[in-house]
Length: 365
Ligand SMILES: *[C@@H]1O[C@H](CO)[C@@H](O)[C@H](O)[C@H]1NC(C)=O
Ligand SMILES: *[C@@H]1O[C@H](CO)[C@@H](O)[C@H](O)[C@H]1NC(C)=O
View 1: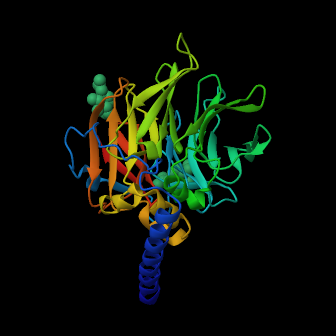
View 2: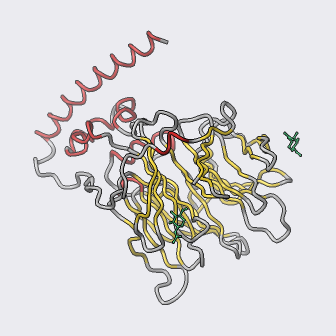
View 3: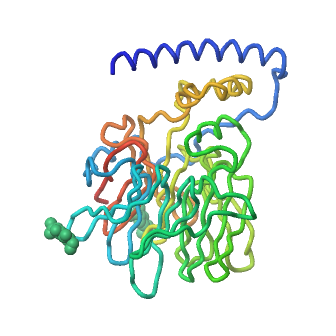
């Protein structure tokens, strides 16, 4: 392992030198020094009321060792908590504290999931598969709900939420880059994300919003009169109106977040929990200030992974329906839990998913 690590370091150093050379050449020959399109990293103005409180170090680890990269968590009406794992399982935490490996899906790219509202009270989960599309998982097994949109294959579905009438709303993080190479979407400053809807009665999926900066978490408001969709590398979440005079219109729900938003979830009292990632460590911000540098790094996949995502921090914020941060929890070192991607409030606790753990975190509120 030590050799591999050292080789990795060498590749990295070599990669950086190559990237610098490439960047300098590109800067000289292709771009003027004032090229537009450099990714703006906004100063965090929506600051935490109490920064760096380390509260996420107090999480209890649920299902440790059983849950490979549980990116998202969902709970059904009976209090059963579900998560989708990297090895293709939908696993669930029963009320008696036992984890059950519930349904297996041939996939290494399961992401956001939601428990669907059904009148029959049967168990049903809708899960995003970044390769296959939108899947429905039930007692009978797994079926593909949406595999194509407007004739094109549905790729990189990221998060999904269902309204009480059965309509689904879901995000596509990028129509250009894949889950395996999601870093490339950040390094390229063009928005390729979408917000979509699926109507089960007509079996048709359609695009509601286009050109989103890595569309990630989606959540419905308590009255289902609007939904919120988060744009990861724009450090903001948008409000899309579903009802009333503003129907079909979009406005900013919250911007200048103190991290890059991943999943967002409605809390029982109508506020929202947003998981924030540190996608660009401070020491690497220089990379993003040069278009040529970003361009060069995109050509070297190992380096692209290295400059995006520090995996060393974790933060979640509670945001009121007015778009103001109420409170937040973090772990500036990621000692217990890093790269938290999801925060679900249920029964006086937060249930936390992550792309960097083998457990779900549970934090008393
Ligand atoms: C919890 O319930 C499940 C299903 O009914 C059962 O298989 C399991 O053994 C139970 N676990 C405990 C600790 O009672
Ligand atoms: C709603 O719940 C959140 C999370 O527990 C809490 O931070 C917030 O203060 C509550 N808001 C109100 C208005 O009670």
